[in-house]
Length: 427
Image (cartoon, rainbow, N blue to C red):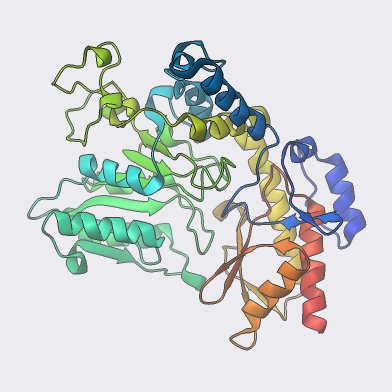
């Protein structure tokens, strides 16, 4: 499969590319919100993914089994509830490049981050720092601050915030290496994103892991903006743990159950953890013994019964990803995002600065845009686009994020956005 990079302006060219797109039928599997008599141009999958058409029936099936079978649905439902989390395991592992025993769907991202830090952040007097990026998503900042304080350390000295050394806050691998050279002996955990939420920059998980492990650091990643967006190849990266959500690019609904990865080398470890009965060894779980014996692998970090009504949408979405293939989606994403960047720079260079790295391999589906001009110009453009049925995402103080998502966005959507920007610039 290949997409033309010989870009041309206009809807005719864009629609020709859409007609030739081998992934075009996946758009029909999603509910596209309306705007008047037309469909929205929905470019906000980096914030909340669209609902798959099959999700409604999947939820109705579980509700029907609950009503029809009650407790027996644990064993006799169409998708029996007792092993339900195993129904998402293989496709989830395929999506994130892991072995099935290394992943589990549970809780929320921030809850999973705390659970991972209980096990992997083991500060000592001399090694108690955590390395993160300066503009980390606030929930990560809050979680890390609270963990540091919980262990009796001061976030002012135990949190090392890595500032961008390239334009627009982009962080180079060299900057990470320099920070590890300077602070490595006192860093307990490196926690960086797979894709930075504000700039859209991709981080090289394998390279970062190698650098940090060489300094004796544990390595974890927040993949909220990476999973379903770009291949992450977690097992081969060698990282110790990772956490992510499923409501963005993985289209599993608001507040969807999240995901967690623990590398297989920790599968049978004696790491301390906060325990719950669903993480107990499956062969003896229902003997209700007083001594916790963890299940091997990521499942051993579970606390409670799987949330069936939250897992059903994830099961549906992961089946779509399994059929589409994350690497095929990445190929389309590279072309689609490059086309949007090209069109913006060609048609409205006087209006927009693109903050996301220009090199296609250093970005995912998201472009972060800053409007030139008066301070309120960005908000004005954002509201103008919304009135036209073009949905992006506003981030204070002045960033518009748009994400042409490979599963359901088109080249047509990209050109329509640029035409709306041109109209705003003329007004």
